Image 1: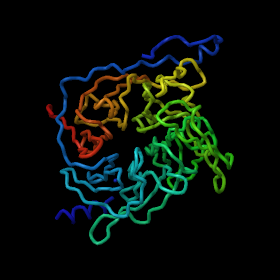
Image 2: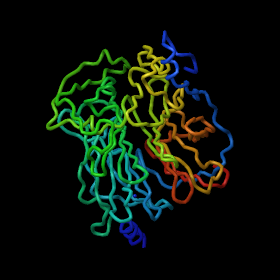
Image 3: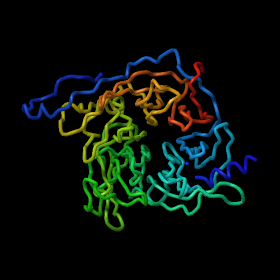
Image 4: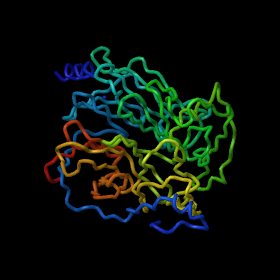
Length: 423
């Protein structure tokens, strides 16, 4: 019965604060400088949870989940495994998963179903792809089918990859589809290399806007432009936050460099959350260094300042200029200092928790928490924080109206948050 049910499911369908602007500025510059966001790093968890926490299944270093139209889920594990999971917790391995480089922050990362999954059964995966010179973020697309009665990815094709490959963590790898289902947004982390986040010829430290088959989307800020064919690769220094200490080398790209045509926004560090709100605005969560985790409203062509500005400081304790000192950079909507280490971002607009409609939920790794963010238009504030007792890697709003979380690490659990108090 289980096998038939799973086959049927595949057939159906996946305080640094508010100070004044530093330095001498003209009146015009001051008028253009947005108000500094509020720091929520010292928020205390709420003791009473207005939900019941139900453990569903356990995984080895889970990273992301995606829902299929019938309520089953796809769950990724960083070592390179993909699971089809029922709401009751029954798991079956999915075949055809690509080879990944599982080390440090790398491995099998995000999973998303296509906007037309009920008809095309297409699945998108991001992962650390091994190859000459190291590894790089890859985006692949495949069809979820069956073979010998078991779910399998068929016709898998890499439709975008970060080149040249190299060293470092912080891959990003989150995917969100535009509300009209026509375009795909992809977060590409700066791989602990700092300066490429400001280099228009490198995809590192960017959010990209692509067609569903991985090409530069029309209407991007740099549409039609190509970049230099030789780009700098900066290897990460050992346990330091100073870009100046990093050795460098160069590598050549084969063919035209399409990064300028793909780029939607610039100046990001490590983006582990990406989602649209009900008004169609795109938001992103981003890990800072020592302090300065961010929630950002993503707008085309904007530069979010990393590594030039941050509300955190480098790991070697060298300071970084604050965003409110540089009006050319976009301010975060809010920031956390100390960090929460945000992972996952989901907007809620369902009926199980009607008091939370319009809120966003963020998982906290370092803070072992679930954070609710409330909005007044585009002004954001942390509204509540619950101690979950484990690092929260992912959060999704499910088709049942509940919230679904993944715990990080070995024996990380899939949790279902329902409307009954307790847990």
